[in-house]
Length: 436
Image (cartoon, rainbow, N blue to C red; front, side, top):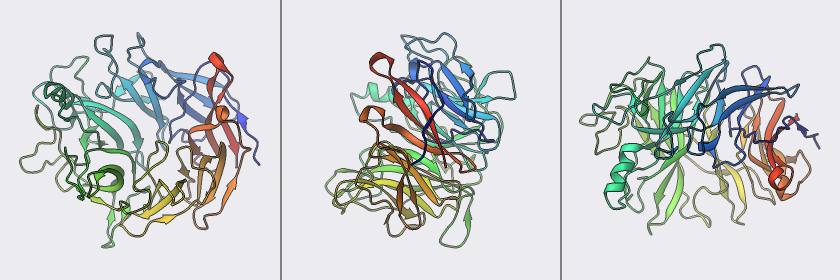
């Protein structure tokens, strides 16, 4: 068994993101100060803790924080630079206009600069809508392997308003998108609602209301990841440089919702729109994917005993070479296990065969050889090739079980994760590490 070392002790939450928590030099772990995963809107601060000494540094604090916003959370470190991105509620949030899915953005913080945060994406909810700007809120930001692009999950403010006025007809369909480093995107009517951004932003998945039963149509695209550190090699032998794997909700032949895995290939040039479909959409239609985008389904699980991806909330992961996508699903005994599927499509492979269900986000070691996760209230590792699993920490009580995710350092020598410590009103989310 490995020794669990507690790194944080403050009487507040220390919530790690499910991925990209280590600084590029592996000296720091970044986190937000939530004590409950649902409390982004009331959370003020982003901090980091030194992995060796436990020293804590406050990186950012919101202005005028209340229970209604702005709020911050889910901070991700850039893979090669001292830079971070995190969810930030709109800076004009108040009781009348609170933090929400469509009222947030990606805040970029460069530790080498003293100017505070910048907006990753541009946002405008007023005409004229602008190509490269979004009209809603982003979250679950993730840097690409080279740190040049950013992926995100998206909800649209204009569609949300249209939904309110259409007597419950669903219009705001969650989807995913990417931000490309193509220079500042400017908008008119700058305000607390509309602002310029550093990146050119587009949606990357096609979603549709009322998917046809038995088809590959989805009405929700979510919890995505970049494929590979440098994309993947497709069936023609060519390298697809930018691609996203995402979870999509389809309907089986009986109309039952099933979550499957899809791949979105991203073109090199995301500024070109499809004929008659502007990237920015219209006031009555959602944004559109760029020209030359493609979307395909790579799992078909509707005939399984337990169809679809299942388990605790998780984001997909891929091997460093992009050849395989990893995910959670129940085995035939109803236990949540880790599986993989080739990114080009093919047979699903069960990797873990545990008596206890996987409880948290899993992550791959930098070399792609080992999975780390929590199951049975303990930290485990599993060899990807053999499927052999090893318990690393003692089994804890339910109250002290590891939560959210288990993350590897860039050098593969440290695992970091969250556990609650204390009792009652003095129970706080703390950061632990084990040395591999």
